[in-house]
Image 1 (tube, rainbow, N blue to C red):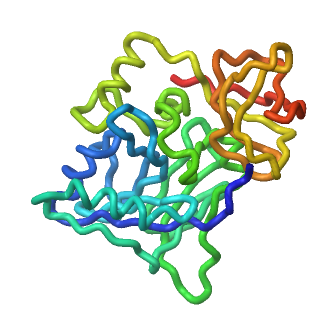
Image 2 (tube, rainbow, N blue to C red):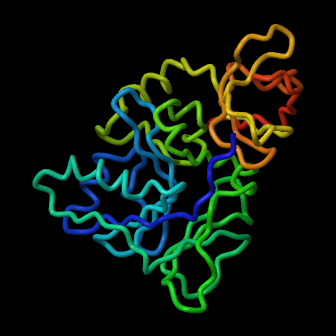
Length: 262
């Protein structure tokens, strides 16, 4: 059930048309992001399902860096390049940079961002050096903060509202066209989303069936989005505090928290 953990990989999109290109592809609004700052963002497919969720940093006026989880940087770079056409942008992996996370942002970083709703959870970008700390990787702190990093097996399964991405500022209902924008707007304005991101504990790391079931009826309620050890994030249908749930093998789980999307 737990994905093979791997450090974040850093994908740079740079060039005179970098902001325009990413603004047309990503679900967040990049215009407020100044140099040295960042935000969470997501790339959706045309059906509004989340391909990837990631921290994004503005390294320069015409350069952005995406911190991609679970070894997917090459995959996403290749897919993004299909939409470049005549845009003046280059897309490449930056092994000379590292992303870190922690309770406070140190001085002399290239860019940083705060996790919405937390004063003590931050990501930042810095240059790599021989004495640099190791690259960050998704962990239990991300589960506690409701950050739904998706591996390749969980990609394109969930819409943005179900993953709580509006709460994180990773999807915009006000900016112009991008893949999946119509689904995002319809879900937001018509209130059709009945699913929410939930934090669970008691998972079996060796369980390969991602379904979460009602302990009362045995009917499926949703699926895991991210699991690390015995902790995880799942998208559940109309979750309620104290709801009795199990995994697909009948193992009882604890619904620790429901992340209400704003």
